[in-house]
Length: 155
Length: 155
Length: 84
Length: 84
Image (spheres, rainbow over the protein chains, first blue to last red):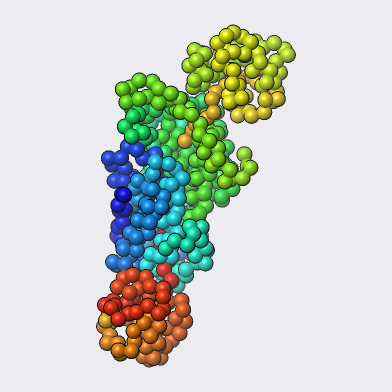
């Protein structure tokens, strides 16, 4: 079974480079799905998010979710890059890439991973408003818990 | 409502460039999902696919499916690039990018578009085997018709 | 009227496109299939399993075999599409 | 044993991490919460709604409040995670 590629970092990522890394040496991949999560400006009210994470636990938890996704959807490749630190509107926060022979597995693998990252990856987001003032910590959303239900009771 | 970006072309595309095109000027996009369909080597038995298309109809049909996806999933951006001509294993065939505030809409938009492209976009694929000899036209798959059912009776 | 063929229809007929004058009683897609099958043995053969053959009228997919073709300037005939 | 705090717990306590000697009868996650709340007014306040506070033992998420902490070298306390 293929191994996931997992990184947490402050720098941005390049999707093209990351797709190439995943594809190299496998000409039997028929479908690649990427998910990029970005910082929104909340209609102009937000100047930045500060992402705090728990080093060590973050990588381990993501790796474990990624292994489950590979196994469950028979993926031929899976990469996850999660940034931390200060991130401005329009900038990337997270990248998930799922590769498979067939399209539905690639879609499901990336979707599954994102749903679990939302509630299982130890990251927290603090908002800075448009004046640059520190604001609230972003609350966990009930709909993120609900989103997990579509994957059954696993994990 | 945002307009889709649709192209048919022989050249390859660059995903990073295409994502930038979609994002420019909108800092309230929170999720970008890309789907890339690639030519598989079918475990080493295939040397190329030749994609034939119906110029004019191809662009119009894709545009119409894309408009439906934007409307149905409230997307903030949608791009579709479909290549034609001879394509070798490992090369890209099609790219779909869906952008939205929230992740599920972006996933659903890209997924919907791919399901409809499979059976509604006038492209046909001829296989060339590993010796370079012309082979069969790829048959439509029942599972592609089935995939449409998850979107209801629309279209 | 212009008829256009794709994929294995194009290959088996040996024609990419052609201009035809249809008799005045050929007014629907179903009529067109009947007329095509009566042209010669090759056409009869290629259109034998007409149910799977798809039709576009003026570059728009038409699945109703009773649809009128009297306003058509271009009709395309092709196997099930396999895009994506 | 090392205790680590994240996000608003870290901010409100004014502590990122600390080393503590737990009494020998503090053997479960539930015991730990009781002990934390009795330390002082600030801790009592921050851990008042303990049900929403999440726990990781040796960097592994632990949702069972009856779980043993006797083999733990590092326990993290944090609000619900908001990754992705």
